[in-house]
Image 1 (cartoon, one colour):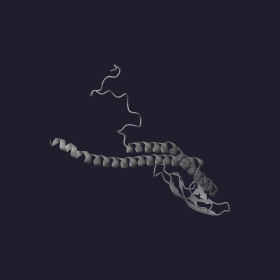
Image 2 (cartoon, rainbow, N blue to C red):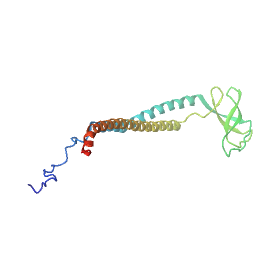
Image 3 (cartoon, helix red, strand yellow):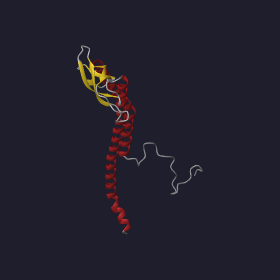
Image 4 (spheres, one colour):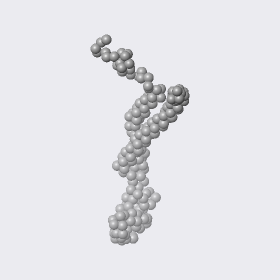
Length: 200
């Protein structure tokens, strides 16, 4: 008997080393399936998440820039006279007030616009109007379009992470149900033998 190979407690030679990788008899088919599907989900998360975020962000940016161009062509800023004063009742918040302005053809128009609080009656304020002559909000800016794209890309990233996590949880739950069923079937097969030993 070699000194480098001590006997096993049962008298048999000790194993040469650990079982080869992938040949562990305790690893079930469901364990292998779970490992491979986990790798697939990780690949989707690592590769798909940035692609989805970039695609969604780019599409959102293009739509927003189209809106920027349309609103820039449709809206213009004019000088208007405040015909109803405001009070500082909301600590500096903008308030709605009646304004009056003249169009290029001399037509006098009136409307309601948000102006700074405590603006006196008769003051000149800047308001945005559309091509039909109605007071409207300022057109979207390039920075707002970029912020919208980043926000959309961020939401898409969270969506991919949530979907991947949900898929993993559903996979794990399905495999666990299968394992529990296998364990129950195996225990039903061996339980009578174990029970008989205690009744001897």
